[in-house]
Image 1 (cartoon, rainbow, N blue to C red):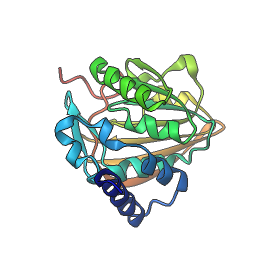
Image 2 (image 1 turned 120 degrees about the horizontal axis):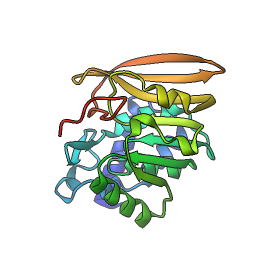
Image 3 (image 1 turned 180 degrees about the vertical axis):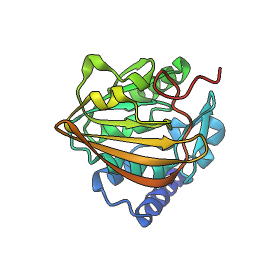
Image 4 (image 1 turned 135 degrees about the vertical axis):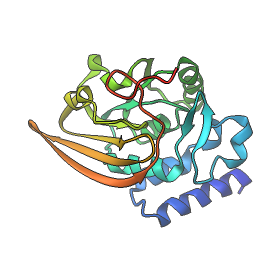
Length: 214
């Protein structure tokens, strides 16, 4: 086993020890080379359980957070997923590996361009665009699952409206210091919410999120 493979297996051992039980999530994270999604300067830390910078004040989330959010989706192969915040492309790769039809939005062109290259190199196909993820992607709605990888002040209404009946949305909500992870399930015209506390994400910027710092 190579050093990279050993480090990846140590990452898997850590997330399972912390309560990740979804075998499809575990299998996807064991398969995907996370080190290809981080800048070269951080490759030696790619499998640490920590967020890492990827440029433009953005991060690739720590492995446990990625695993927890993905497990919270309760994703089934073939489902249509909207990802808000492509970032490095790592989360999109996991969704693709799990058999999802992935649509992903990123507001930074340079990040999306790099993510596209990495996903293509690994053979994953995801529809992607530069845009304001807080308003969703109405042309392809409704979505079975929506995952938001940046922190919002509130759950954006456009994302709720783009959920299919029985669909599920996972999003960090809170202030800029700490957030709770909110899972929303649509039941007819009702939305059931569950909350888990203690997460830290970069801000979700857009019309229905935080104002741009630029």
